[in-house]
Image 1 (cartoon, rainbow, N blue to C red):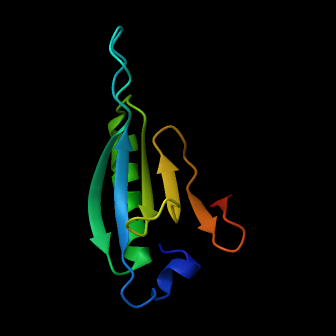
Image 2 (cartoon, rainbow, N blue to C red; image 1 turned 180 degrees about the horizontal axis):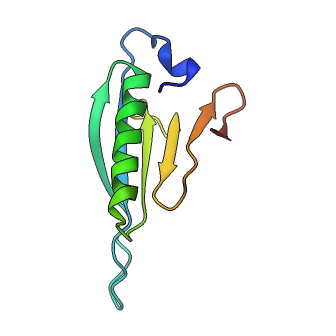
Amino acid sequence: GTIGSFARGSIVGESFEVVQFVEPDFVPGVPYPGPEETVLGEYVSEGDAVEHGRKAWTAYREQGIRQVAWWIVRVPGENLARWIADSRNATERVLDLRTQEFIDL
């Protein structure tokens, strides 16, 4: 389900994107290229974006893929994530906008 603050509307004109990052396989002698970043969708509702991210995270974990991946929800262009989850951890986190700290759900 949705989390309390996610169910509320967003600022008019604000949108939220779901982004997936996947770490590449290690290849000896090849410089680290950084994670592959893919925007999975953009939403008017933060709750809808989180729900999409949660589904992508859950499906990836259920497939047992060994590559490390993580998913975030953010306002396009922002550096802070509003929600984050990673493939090696069963804990979701949300950003407390008052303290700018992540809180485990």
